[in-house]
Image (cartoon, rainbow over all chains, first blue to last red; front, side):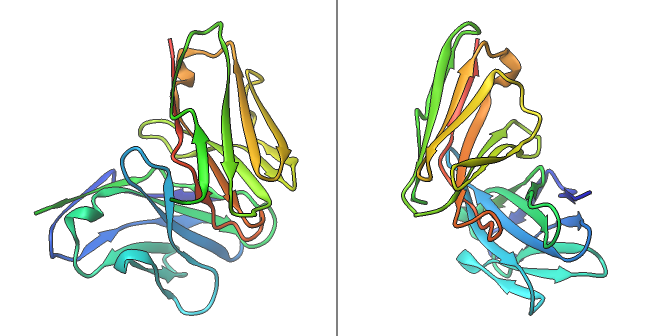
Length: 114
Length: 113
């Protein structure tokens, strides 16, 4: 069975500081991993994904995520947060073989204070 | 904009009404999805269509009825809904089901009275 956990409902960070939004997963075999962002009154927007290769994935708006197989984690990071980064962030996972269902986490709300 | 549009953006309906949600994608994608987003809950996948064929139905109650007349359009027909069905309904598409980078529409905010 596949699952994804975002252990923090909310993350608060000051503008200019680094941010981390955590995600851990469980999947049989190798995973596809995704991060999406949702701004108010909008649908989800794709940020980045890990398929294979380099464990550090760079995405849109200066975000990056590191795939850690031993810890089954895929934390989202940004070196310097902006107020405009405030949004709801979703981690998602799908097994590379077998079923094709993408499972989303419950989301983490990021607040960046000026 | 993501290339996926949804109408209406807001819908209020009574439990005895029949209404439909519409989704259209202008990306040339072959797979389309309906999700339900409720507050503080994971995104719930409802239906998946691939090349107009339904490939997944996640035990969704029959009061929700999807329709995919072609690869660009997806409908969700609603009838005799319950108040707990109030949520944001999101449509998404992807180039194919396997590639799975999904592009989402803005959603329809549904309120069932």
